[in-house]
Image 1 (cartoon, rainbow, N blue to C red):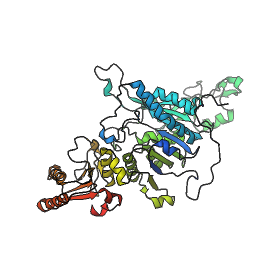
Image 2 (tube, one colour; image 1 turned 90 degrees about the vertical axis):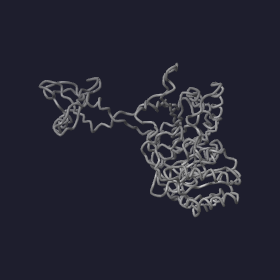
Image 3 (cartoon, rainbow, N blue to C red; image 1 turned 135 degrees about the vertical axis):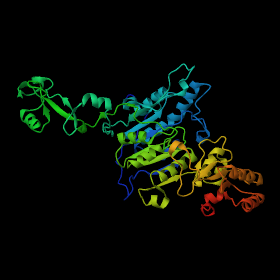
Image 4 (cartoon, rainbow, N blue to C red; image 1 turned 120 degrees about the vertical axis):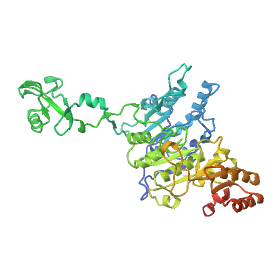
Length: 511
């Protein structure tokens, strides 16, 4: 008979995982891999019960072209028919969650990150797929301090939190590591107001035995006070001699000295307001519209996994969950349908985690290596990409940084910073030492496009730009001749790079 509340979860035979080859963390699956593609197809390639922790933060509207994330100033979540859109979203997510439930270990944990748009519908769907008896918490994360959608004229309160639905895999032995948050200054001043001569803070705590004789607590006289005590007389005497028992006045009930520095803090609850969101001047901000802070994902990874466990993010966007897993010594798998997102997270793993994107090192099970699979790296597939997606691919392939907003770029699709310089951290501004990148998804760029890019190089910054890079599938002879003439006239260089040269990795020498 099926367990109540677990009707939608597919059955799977429980097997013992075989021993992995030397240096490989799992014999069942490859880790430290980013897969580019629909997670429904990718998940079907994974074996049953192979993942310890799953976190997903899927886009609400699965029908929108969310690959083009730098083309947005905010998430496009307005629909003519809210109910119909929500139903379409649930219909899209259900088969993917069924596959996620299949690959989740019975000792594992599952987190679904969403907001007010569909959270109630998501909860019902997850109860069916993962089992309502496996639901543990509805976690609230305060993701902003204020919301402009509740300004003058609005008839609702400001929407400033996200919801994380937390489920476990069904076993009583699910991984759960108790976490604590620090006491507030107000709490410390109120309850730990006593200090030793060396400044060590403490509070008074009860030594009386709860329940008295009925609970078997011993009764005796201690420091002139007869009570039922929590400890036997010998232990009470040792605590007193160690300075851990204080009597505030003669005849007062003795109390235990509980030091602040011996307390772990407040056990973590389902209300998370201590982790700040990604704001405009955040050092980790990449420009991805739904980017979550690394601290948030590190909390989830720490809470529900152990070192070397496998963490899976099937909608990994800019890769925050992968960074958190790598930082904390876990194995990981990332999946995203967007080629740009996959390249962004690969660059982030290289820059932030100092990993190497290397097939030979990865095959040798080097812990600092990862690979990206199934990217559309053919001329035909690149020609079929949406324009903004193609621009982002080209800029990132050159080692540049795409524009965070694709409208009004004034002929600059991205920037390359010379070695030794980097984007300035303060205020999200960039160093002024950079080279412009122009990208055209054209078979043959002609002289008019080169003329326009020359104007960009002369216009940008004080004194213009001395070097620029142009990417296309090919160039006319007039375009090549104009670049040479521009160099003779101004001393400035335009490097013409073809997509094929980038695919063949021959562009590095030309740059």
